[in-house]
Figure (cartoon, rainbow, N blue to C red):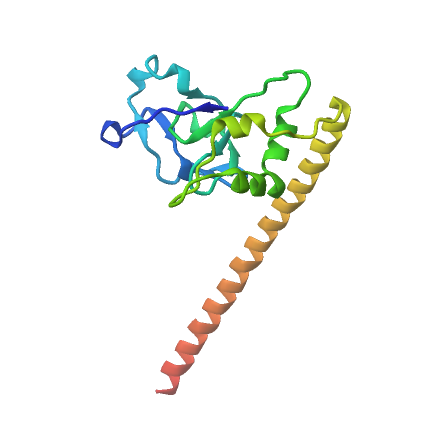
Length: 189
């Protein structure tokens, strides 16, 4: 686990290198609805903290143990303090997608919360993350597990889209009813 840099908010600019902060790392994804940037001309200065699409990130303070993957839309990006970039040690022994699935599990998040310290705010050390033991089945089993998870996630996404569509229809129906009720009330006057 590699830690980020302590960027100062007064150094933020309107565009450039996106600073990935703790608030950006949500359960299973990176969300950036309030982007902060460091000047692009400082890229060389912060190349040790640069990120690329697919990188696994983890919150180390507050809601510890949340992980997300950086998306291409977030590039170019750099890592802020108290966010860890999880790098594979045993390349060729573990799939990145399998590691992400393990780290994105409720079991791992509960263990991270349990392993955190701090009185006012939970803090997880990158050492704790590095020492955490994960099950490591053979690559063929990892591929099968990842395929199964991805198939289930595709179903979840499809169902979310369906739910959104039905919620929109419900709201349109209610709006129509309210509009008809308002028209009826005016007609009755």
